[in-house]
Image 1: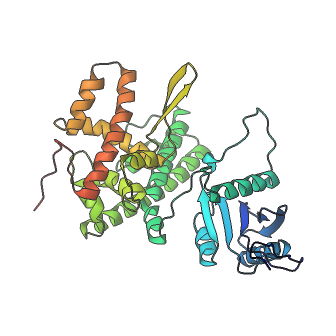
Image 2 (image 1 turned 180 degrees about the vertical axis):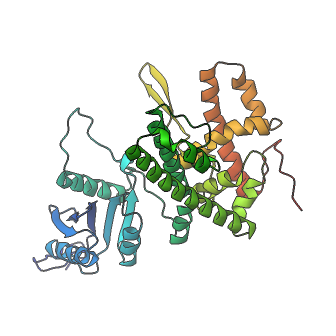
Length: 378
C-alpha cells in the first residue's frame, strides 16, 4: 500500500484532535461549551465549584467527539469573582487554560445585540480556537503566584477601609446637620467623645441612637486601619520587603505608595521594554487614524487602575519634591507655561515616564536622572 494513501477509519477509531472548552462562570452554576472543531458544540451545566462534574463533562465531550482519552484539552474563562483558583486547578489537571480580560473580548457593535450564556459560551469557544491558531483576539492575563496574590490583600483592604471610614464620617455629619449641629472637631477623632457628650442632647433620642451606632462602626474601622498599618510598618522595619524599601528611598515616594506599586506591578511582573510597562498600567496612547480623521483619544486605561492612579498622584508630588530631576524639567519645559487642561494632560505623560524610570530603578538600580534620595537614618 502507498504511504500517501489515506487510511480508512470507522466510527470507533480515536482521532488525535484537541478539545476546546469555554466556561461561563456564574454564582450558582457554570456553563461549559466544548468542541473539537469538527463537531458542533456540546453544552453542559454544572454546579458552581463542582470540579468532579467539570472533569466528567470533559470526559463526555471527548467521547462524543471520539477523541483519544489523552487528547489535549484547552480551556478559557473570563476574569471575575473566582479569581485564579480555577485556573490553577485546571492546570493541575493537565488542561491548558487561559484567563482573559473581559473588556478585551470583541463584541458586535450593533445598538442592540442578543446576549445570554449560550451565545457567550459559543463566542468564547470560537475565540479560544482562534487564539490557539495564532490570532491575537484578546488580552490574556498573567498569573501571579499564590504568595504574590495574597500579598496584595493588605493595601486593598486598607483602601476599602479608608473609604468606609470616610462614608461613616460623612453620614454622621449629614445626620447632625439635620438639626443644625456642626461639630468643629474631627468626627471619630481624639476629641469627638468629649464633644459628643456635651452636644448629644441637641438631637432627638432616636437619631442620637443612630449616630452612636454609626460612631461605633466608625471606631471599629479606625481600629482595623490602625492594626493593618502597624503590621505593615513592622514588616518594613524587619526588612521583609526590600523592593518597597528601595523604592521608598526616592524623595517624593512614601512607604504606602511604594507598597502599592511593588505589590501591584513591579514586585512580580517582568517587562521586556518600556512599552510593556506603560501598557500594563494603561498609560499608552490610543490614536484614531482613519481616512482624513486623525484624533488622539487619550490613554487606554486598560491596565492596573490602582497603580495608574497612584502614579498620577506621585507625578504631582514628584514636581514639588524633585525639582532638579530631568523629569521635572521636561514637564516644566513642555506644560508648565500652558493652561490647566494642558497641565493635566502633561501630568499623565509625566506619570508614564515616571513609571518607566521607577521600573529601571528597581530592575537595574538606575536612579532617575537628577533625582535625589532620602538621607539614610542611622
